Length: 459
Image 1: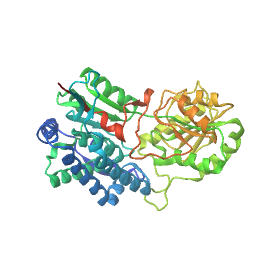
Image 2: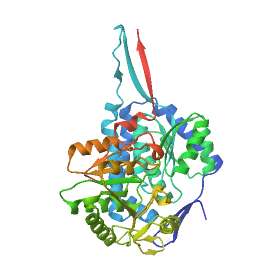
Image 3: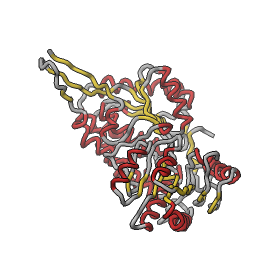
Image 4: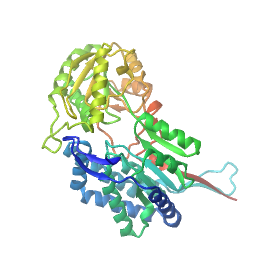
């Protein structure tokens, strides 16, 4: 079987296979991206680059049904969520069309001696490599490619091997958009490459930076190669985000948010709430209500109306999650509810009594598995929240605004959400600390990662 294949996780059926790029084709792809940068991207202004991205946004909206169906076939996302992802991707592209010129404008510097002038001019670096994951095939690409093309960089895009159909669909959109505005095709080039080929791409002197969203192992491997070749890297790895409940006036609403935060995208989101840390006085009632609501959602056909939980993305993903749960039980954790397992369908599972010596205490569970923790104080909640190698997102529920800010300041994470979940927006930066990665995507900050902030000083 080809490395790049569409295997429907709901049925296990192989629907399509795509050939891996040849060495000659890869060389041509890099040359095309480099030429697009040299001959067009660095010569035209932000308005011309934004016009291309505006067309990309338009085509995503026009083809939302087709694109969403592809995502469901590839990784099992419920159809309604897939449609929402396509819409969000279109909105991300449009955000950089609307704000790119503002954020990339020259920035004057006040000189201490008062003579002459100086300013910072932002310009693209050249060819960038994006290594994207399967869980959000359109959104992940949009938040990387959108701002960086507007900033003046060309893109080589390696998608996950299980997402070749969505990768090809996006490549077709970019090609059509480039033709519509008179841009070269090399502005965005899809490459179905192997890991060994990607190492050569990173080493190529024409490639100036790499953005990776994926596992810690993948991020470490890419960063090691990039470091040897002195290439800038943005990393978004995993997360084991805490959901801290300290006080509430509406426990039912908090439970609803908690369930939604764990089950979004079949529980396969890096910034999903995964560890539920509850103050002692609310623990028993929260645990009972959460477990009932969480397990009431059962896996179903992701194309079915109202489906909230589809299959996990692959047989490997289902096997890995099952092994984690079984190992947690063997090491002494309580499996309060064991979800049913049927092929790649994995029912909601609740763990309790997870202790520091267990693997489950440190691991990320990428699927519908929730761990419940009881704490006796704010300080204990913060300490537990921070006792993890990850630091992506976090959620804090409290009726005390001063406590909310105190806890938000104390949590080691790139993002803190107070009294809400699923609040991602185009203008909000996304990223983490510790083993969750470095750098930021989305919002204004995405335009700062891969640009030359060139100082120009005039006498």
